[in-house]
Length: 132
Image 1: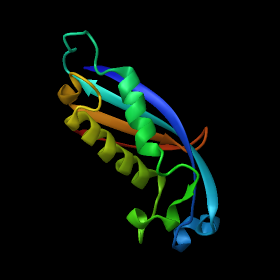
Image 2 (image 1 turned 135 degrees about the horizontal axis):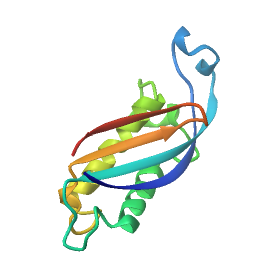
Image 3 (image 1 turned 90 degrees about the horizontal axis):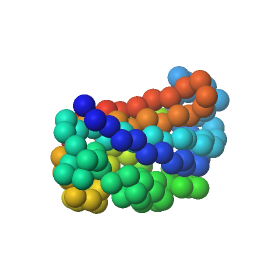
């Protein structure tokens, strides 16, 4: 299995509901380092998994509407707990769509799996991985 991974980061604010979250129930900020790995069984005719530049642009486009925003105020997240795990799936969905629609360039449709990892600190991270 071949893989290519791109990285970016995002700064957001949000809060959670429920005693499980302790002080995180109050509005707080988070800076996530976001890694997106694209997997495929065989390389393209150009001997790549995907075009790294286009993959990075797709990730930037996915993160831009969330950057420097309070996620509690975004209609698309109304009533949702925007945990690290939840956000990794949200980003996965957008990156899978980019693969299916050609935004990753020629051969992007051959990506079989994607893993999105959000590093919320140097000691904690969460991810979502699934088939495209």
